[in-house]
Amino acid sequence: MNRLVSSLLLCLALAGRLAFAAEPAEPAEPPEPAQAAEPVERDEAKSDEEHHDAAVSIKVRTSDDVVFNAWGDARLPANEETDGVIAIFGDAQVEGEVHDAVVTIFGNAHVTGEVHGGVISLFGNTYIDGRVQDAAVTVFGDLELGPNAVVDSDIAVIAGKLKRDPQAVVHGKTEVLAEGFTGQGIRVWIEKCLFYARPLAFEAGLGWAWGIALGFLLFYVVLALLFDRSLTRCVETLETQPGQSAVASIMAVILVPVLMILLVVTVIGIAILPFVAMALVCATLFGKAVVLAALGRRLTRFTGIAPLSHVAFATLVGGLIVLALYVIPVIGLIASNLLGIVGLGVVAYTVLLSMRQRAARRAPAAAAAAAPVASVSDPPAAESTASPESTASPVPPVTPAPVAVDATTAPRAGFWIRMGALLIDIILVSIIVSILDTPDSVWIVALAAYGAIMWKIKGTTVGGIVCGLKIVRRDGAELNWDTAIVRALGCFLSMVVAGLGFLWIVFDEDRQAWHDKIAGTLVVRPPRPQSLV
Image (cartoon, rainbow, N blue to C red; front, top):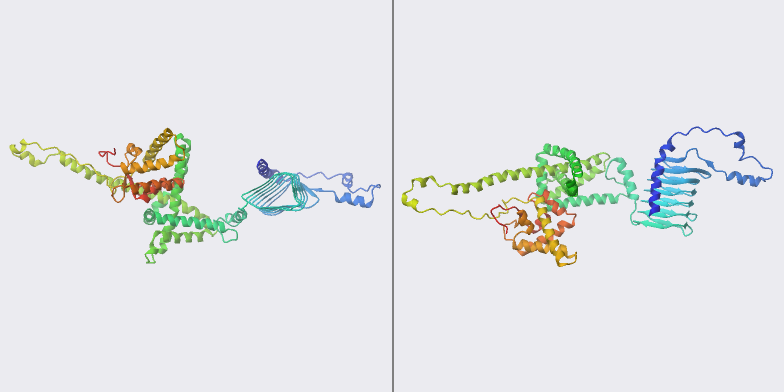
């Protein structure tokens, strides 16, 4: 592998020398007549046949130090020599002698002469039927050794195949990495898609690119099926307030880099930077599904068929439309970028509107809850005119009834308060497991069992008690063992997919994680008078 790294570095070094090789060379002084005549001067002691062999063995030195060609083939004929041969987006044909190395980028290398250095091909195939004194490296391509091939050092093939003639000689090691993966498709994508500023194209060898695109489309449809309410709400925001959504998209493009920089320059921000990055990725993916659904609803709303009016079918239709746009040069690249930018802005703006609506709903509820307390503390005006007999017996004080936790009106617990409670529970379970001296593999099972038992007995955990949280069922029924166990098992699903199930709390309207949706539970913050213990 060290030889492989050194060969790749050699590729970069040769590319750096192009600037010097491309400069016009100073005109060489004309050779003296005597020197020019030396190779062909006849020696009386030699026969005509010997003189003919000596003349054939003379090699012509090329005028440039490096034979270089971009967007074309670089050729070195036989009986010529140079320091290096470099071809970019073209093939290299080497029949002469190369003192340094042969490098091709997005092209094939065909070497039948002698190379004192190495042969490196990036995104291209290599054929060697001569002598190579250094390593032969092929990345995203195939390497073939002919019967006359002699490689004095190592051979490395990355994402390609090695074909070796039985008579070929390799003095170093042979390494083939990711042999089943071929880079020919990547080369076709770069030539037919990247250079045309589009993500997709109808070309042979791009089946993998279409497979990735269709896989993401299926992922967006699944999101629409699982979170149809949240996605529909975002779609309605985009349809009813397109101007505000566009402004939110522009602000997201401006503020996201600023937020990342602020997190990097602060010590505390570095710790939460991965979570913020993951949240942005999730919001962007969900936002793309929103834009696809909004685009598809332009057509599905006129069908009049109930199953076809579902937001998941609209997402599928919108995705097919976008895939058609992806194959158009320039427009495909613009559509791909706008899809993520507008999606992120719509999701952020919808979350902001939801926060405002919840704040507006909490204000009347708080005022209504305070009204009965005021009526109890203030005696009615009719009591001032009551008879002395009626005033003789004191009125017992009225004790307010304990406030029950209502799943429909109780405020939902946010992401950070829930993560704080989870951190407390993790520390507690870790201490217990370390005291019991159990294997580390038991820790995650102990945490799940601890959560299920505490949820059933107390409706919360120790961390939830400290942070003032309670687990309730969405339908208002009592939390039973089945719900607690299903919720504990659902936590594994929320955690195994890079923690996306927990990050979903940030975007969900009811602040539900994936395991909350599976078990039908909510995490609420009950009023202060109610004790969780």
